[in-house]
Length: 259
Ligand code: NAP
Image 1 (cartoon, helix red, strand yellow):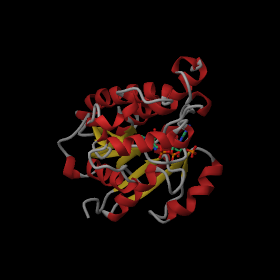
Image 2: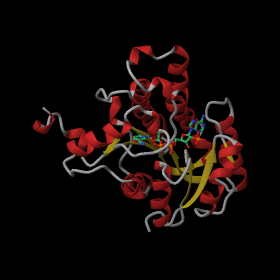
Image 3: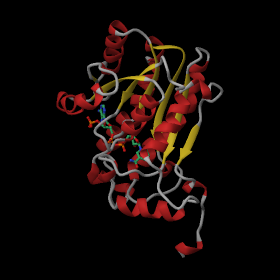
Image 4: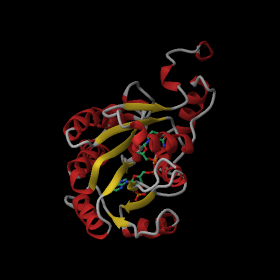
């Protein structure tokens, strides 16, 4: 029960298939209490039953693309519950019409929108982290291997993830003097709502399975357990890291079966 007595915020739960759900399950198993944000009233109602099973707090509205929403949500938490121990940022967005074909067809509008929601929102979260997190607080965001190597159709999301990973290092430096840690999990592919927007996602899943030293895809639970570790005091010496949780598939360059 390494999270006993800790309470934290999860941003980015859409449904039971979300990576955030696997993280919530693992945190709960380890004793944590949880709070959730949701982008809109519609989704807030959709996830409120799930959220109740994790801590009996109301879901807080927070559209990370709107100026002031993150700060408002954090103020609301501090005034009702007090300071918390950790934050999980499990949020990304791109127009799915641009997660197919050639990357250079990305529009300026979607490039900026994808960067805003998938990368800048984490910077803004960290900017306000000191107002909501206790000393020795911890933040984790989610990234993907497409930031390092070309993955068909991942396109603009790859750029947003590369920027997100670089921001993790800068944010870790910014917040380190306050004892706050910032890390990312580079998760292997999981079939979720967001992932199904990437064209031919099932091929990514099966290619990943074939490449992986463990010969399988990672599970929601495994990503959740790694995240719990990064949010717990067990990882107190780790910050600014991008940890791959993908059954090792990122370490394989070539497999002769492929050629
Ligand atoms: P998901 O269940 O669809 O979760 C994505 C979440 O982002 C949703 O809860 C969505 O909220 C939220 N979101 C989008 N725009 C938002 C906004 N403006 N304000 C607040 N929330 C917003 O998909 P997921 O796969 O679990 O994604 C979670 C994270 O894991 C993402 O960063 C993703 O890139 C990353 N990741 C996923 C995979 C994978 O294979 N699935 C692999 C590596 C990394 P609504 O439901 O309200 O729209």
